[in-house]
Length: 264
Image (tube, rainbow, N blue to C red; front, side, top):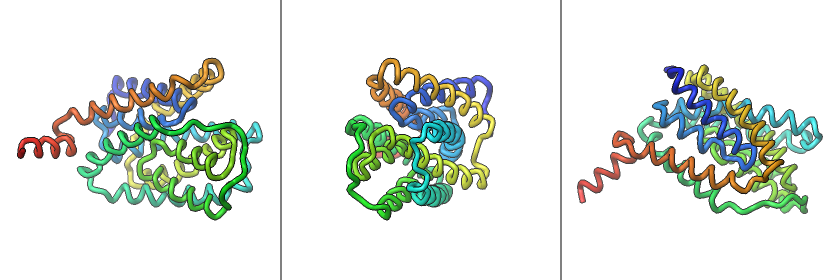
């Protein structure tokens, strides 16, 4: 399926907002996935199309951080490979799930990720001593990569939190290496979903343009005004879009709850 011009324009605007917020505080997928679902895109195609547009954003960020020398490719080559493998596995699992179950599961995951962003701790910018070795780093990359291939929103925040809290990186270096790990997982997940024919190319590429422009805007806002307002805006928009999904009686989760209420 492909969408009409008006819907694609609205999704580009959502991608712009998501890209802006993602550049400041992460979590842009909490806006783009529910926006795609609200536009009538099936759950599997929504995740696949979001993976296409987010790959462009993370790829551009990797180049930017690499040019500034913030990425240690030698140390993070194996974790990036683990993230790639894990994401491919997660995307494969996603393609095997019943669409009705997936329609019910995604709103729950979106609410859980919004709660995570609401309560996640603030992170510092000073490098500290690592509490773990390279084997654990590879294992963490594999697990988070698998989650990214299966769903995606919050992946960057999970990577960054782990790199700061467990592996001792300062925030800037953690974000830089997060983009590398996230790019690897995006590429693998996208490849699997492309092979299954689940990507809406016109929609995804249009959203990629919005996401890239939003990323530039977000970087400017972060440097000029700080990141204080980004997280509350992300949570509000994500919950509002998720509520729109659940308002539809045809949603399997909503239908199940209504059936329980009716039975009671």
